[in-house]
Length: 98
Image (cartoon, rainbow, N blue to C red):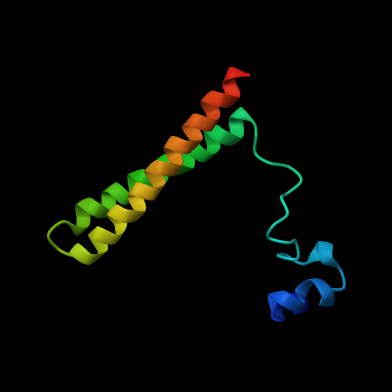
């Protein structure tokens, strides 16, 4: 672990001698220089979401009648993943309209 990462986040920016080498030194309010705004980026995120959705569906089936707490938790997570997929499908459609 880099020594500047051991310090509290409030002191990180002031203390870290080489900001570019410290993960997390960038302010949370600042945006990265490049954003994923290309069709392959959106398609990659969609594919990852679909993979996660498939795994969560498997967990739901395995826990049916065995572990309702885990099943309920995974159903909630699954809903979030489905929302993410739907959101990125919308981003992709908007991008492809250009």
